[in-house]
Image 1 (cartoon, one colour):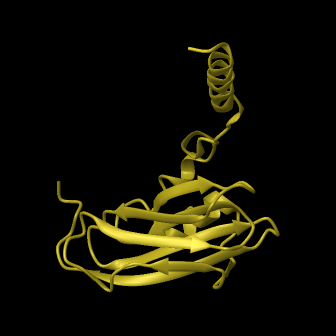
Image 2: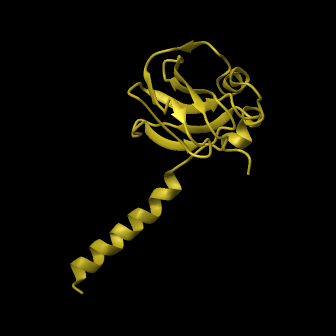
Amino acid sequence: MERRQFLSMTLGAVALAAVPASVRAEDFRKSKPTVWTAKTVDDAIKAMYGSTALTMEGVKLKAPDVASNGGAIPVDFSTDKDITSIAVFQDANPEAAVMVAESTKYSVNKYSIKIKMAKSGTITVVAQGKDGKLYAAKKTLDVALGGCEG
């Protein structure tokens, strides 16, 4: 191995090792525990963001109209807004919160997840803009076979 190649590989490894130390993610289960125990979507949104005043624009949400099995419902959502976080809630299970993700200026706010729903209900995606507004989208779907039985 040549000296230059060795040095470039070593510097690359050092740079990769330093990157995880600079990444910081908030653990919302510790910082906002009431979000994860809230029984209604409105209570979970209020616990997460301090308000339930939603602006129904700026977020795209795609989910099936009918889910044959509630055990793995595909949900795609995205936003082009400048946001600080994005969260998913549903009203079919005992706890309303599904997930929360922080967003930075480098984030690509396009997500594909699968969620469980015990029965038919509504999925709500809320994105908190850097302007303080809560942008949202909702989708109601029917679940033929609940996914939370076991």
